[in-house]
Length: 136
Image (cartoon, rainbow, N blue to C red; front, side, top):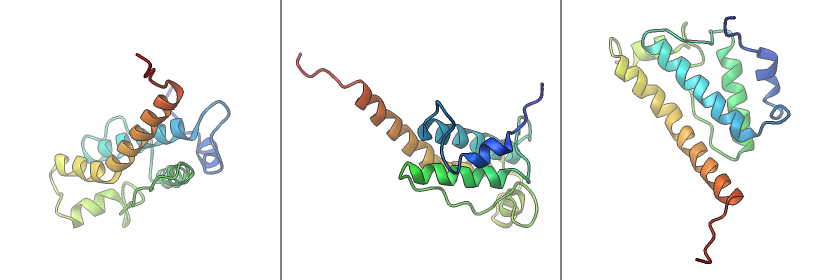
């Protein structure tokens, strides 16, 4: 069975997480999806799940979920993979031709701070749920 994006589910994430999930879980999953797909597009193109039509939907959902978590959403200098506002055009216009590492670095620069902030929130949540016993 091929991987298919549930666009209706992604659009619903703008209004809240699905039952049984938290915004933190959703934000982490969307960050991984966006990171993986943009790195894939900027390198060998294998393993990409999104296309130019649905990547903006995922970016909007990601933005909304991060705002609910009181985190700063990343600023995207592109909205699609290809086309005039696409990642490909962006890397060609910004001196990243013929460099998969430059493409990876670009995506890391955009999503790295978000991933790091989510890891910090995850750690705080863990510490809140499992406080250290300081009586020893």
